[in-house]
Each structure stands twice: as structure tokens, then as C-alpha cells.
Image (cartoon, rainbow, N blue to C red; front, side):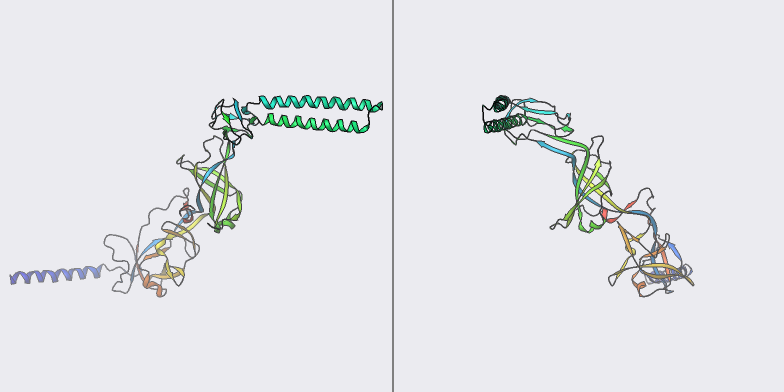
Length: 390
């Protein structure tokens, strides 16, 4: 048993010596860049030669869109629920459910027998008053009546004509016509129903164009203006996108929610969009065609500021260079850097803590692959567009 222990100890010492010799021959040179692999050491480790081992990533260039997303409901260009001004029995329906109607088209006719009789009576009284006025004028010319009699006849005619106008208005109120071109909804009445004044009859919608009202935080006030493009998507038509423009911005901010009401309008020539649909509106404020982005973990917060550790070329290899980061738009896991970096520059993503003490520290870097950058035809969206809808 003692002999066995001695053999094991000798084998162990030999293995340790072999490992030490291998490490000395394979020690990375100062300033070398390695690809990340299974045998990579911990990012924050320091080699015996005094080199800080760090992980890095390359700055890439993307096309970014600065936008904001909110939700709302679609509304038609014009929409109205028709209601009668007077009570009556439905004598005629001049439309079918879902039918396109024209402005002025008769939709509902209430029984106007009584109002029409009153109109005829008023017209007869007006005719008598007109005849009396004409006769009194002839008699005045022959000095058979006084001028005051003629004046009274003229006043009586005016009263009679007013009664005619009133009776005619009563007749017209029994006719409910389309106020504009549009599409009729489903009727809430049937032929022969007795309806009260103010009862729902049928809704008319002009869906030739649609609008969507949504709210954005007040911080966007200075960036909103009429004519800005808006991309609208609806759950009812997945995968489809409809282009519109901001039509109006409310003149005041909601004091409770600190949000601003915005209305966008979009064409609807095929009638695919319907009033009441749930919609998501994306407003694009700016587009960055050549935005330099780095992984978010490359940022180092210190003293209320954000810093980057850039890998620079030193006299004898790679060294650290600390940069204050001017951050632009944000993406999931990535940020835009406005100055100080170019495409392909290396930034430290792990092992940054000991590099914040100063510049020029020698580095041994391990480059971490970040995957292919998105194509320019598929712009990345800024983080403002990815926050929960307002």
C-alpha cells in the first residue's frame, strides 16, 4: 500500500510539471486578440505577465429608427347614429343593412298623415289671408277701407305663411335622411315599430378614410407636428401595416396622465379597416442611417456618467482607453454611441472594473461574437418603441 501511494505522488508531480511547461509555452502574448472558446479563462483574470484578460465586442453600424408606440381605436372619417326628433310609427325603410347610401337618401319615413293634414290646413289659411290682403288693397284704392285695414291683412298673411312653414317643418321631421355618403349599419328598428324621439334607428359610417386617436407622453410635445408619418397595425389584420400621417395634436396636456392626445388619419380605399378596431400606432421621429452601436454591457457607470473602455493600439500591443459615452438611441441589449467610436472598434464587455483606474493598461483580449448585424433594409427600432404602450 505504501508503494502505491508513492507511485501516485510521483505521477501527480510529473503531471503538474507538464502542465506548468505547457502553460509557459502557450501564454498569450501582450496585446493579442483571441476568439472566445471553451478553454477561455475568466474575463476578469490577470495573466502572470501582468496583462488584464478581458472580453471585447466590435462596434457595428445599423440603421435605427427613433419612434414611439401607443395604442388606440380606429374611428371613421364621419359617423353618426341617426335618431328621430319626434315620435312616430315607422312607415317605410329606405335601405338595407350594410348598404351604401348617398347624402340626402331617405332612410326612415315615419307616419306623416297628421302633420301633412296640418300643412294643408295652414296652406289653405294662407291662401285666404293672401286673398283678403289683395281685396283690401283694391278697396283702399277706391277709399272704401282705411290703410290700417290693409296693414292688418298683411300681418295676417305673414302669420299664415309662418304657420305653413311650421307645418312643413313638422312634415320634414318625419323623414330621416342620410347626412353624408357612407355605409348603413344594422337597423335597430323594423317596419311598423313605434319609436320615441331620440331612439336609435341606424348608424351611418363614412369609412373612406380612418383616424386613430392615441396618447403619447408629454416629453414628445416638441417633436410632434402635423404631417408626420405614422405606421398603424391592427390585431384583426395580422401582418398588415397601414401608413398614415398625424392630422392634429391636442392643444392641451392631460393633467392627470401627463399625456398628449394625437390624431392620425390614414386612407381606407378598400374598406378593410372598420371603426372600433384596436390599433397600434407607431410614430417615427428620426432615422439614423449609420448609427454606431455596441453591446449594453460595454457601458460602465461612474459618477453619474457612462463610460466605455476602448481597445487601442499601444507601443507594444493592445491597451485600454477610457471614453465618456454619449448615448443616443437604445435597442434591446445594445446602445447607440454618438461619438468616439467607428465601425469595427473593439470595446471591453467583461473585465472592465480594474481598467477604470486609467488609460494605457496592457490587455489580452478575447473577442466575443455578437452575431450578424441586421440588414440595412430591416431597420432596428429604438427602445422608445419597445416600451409598454402608453
